[in-house]
Amino acid sequence: MNELVSRVAAALGDGYPGAPNGRVRDVPDARAIRWYSTIGLVDRPAAMRGRTALYGERHLLQLVAVKRRQADGRSIAEIQVELAGASESALRRIAALPDPTPATPPAPRSARFWTERPAPPRPPAPPRADPPLPADPLPANPPPTEPVLTGVPLEGGAVLLLPAAPDADDLAAIAAAARPLLDLLSARGLLRSTP
Image 1 (spheres, rainbow, N blue to C red):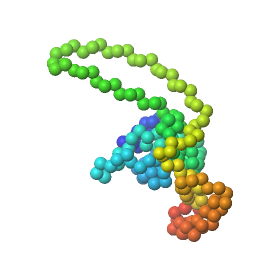
Image 2: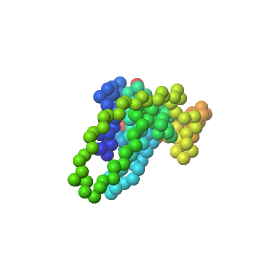
Image 3: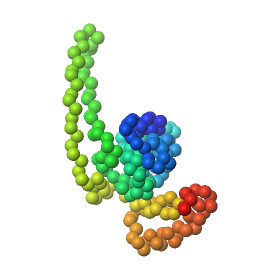
Image 4: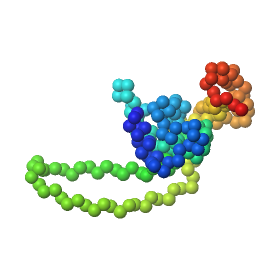
């Protein structure tokens, strides 16, 4: 996980302003990444090797996209609504990261490569221009294989994740039904105090 944290820090770069309110870490630590995974902002690890979680390119894109949106002043609930089920291209656009360049396979070596004189170095390739970004940041219809969750903000910073978008009547019923749970969470100090 430390490697993932380092990759997020490198991807954000030196010009990253951080969250405007100062209450959010500029780079997520291991605990924050696990929490993001729990609330659905970041996919679960791609695999486990013993007790070590393995993360891939999509996880990096999700974390950088979350940090970019937090730097814009958006709440976790707003970010959840926007990024739930987002494609990799949409995440890459929000994260402001370039497309990965495909790895060039190494040239085959002769059996006695140590006796050959190395080829002179090639000049660096000119920088390529990135194509313009489309106006719509997210696809109109997310892929059916990825679950789409809707975040419903509750009092004290709690967020309820639902597999479908609720209407106004549903929101009122959810708020009434959540009252006992919110009271319990508040009594235990697990919610933000509301002014």
